[in-house]
Amino acid sequence: MSVQAYILVQTNVGKSNEVAKAISEIAGVSKSEHVTGPYDVVVRAQANSIDDLANVVLTQIQQVPGITRTLTCPIVNH
Image (tube, rainbow, N blue to C red; front, side, top):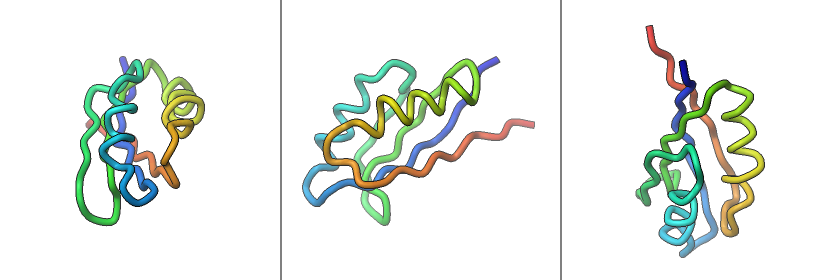
């Protein structure tokens, strides 16, 4: 069973499209879209465990140039 999450990303001004494209290339990311509102990019990702997901966020997604902040929202399935 895998863990899935939405990751809300804030970027530097004018970098959201570039950031969304870079994130879409990361393994485990199923969707990365440039949006408007308080967040600039919304990402859907999955991993084998919450620890693996945290590793993807910390070592890959947050390392993309232009990102200023992320908020990870794990999906809860009943």
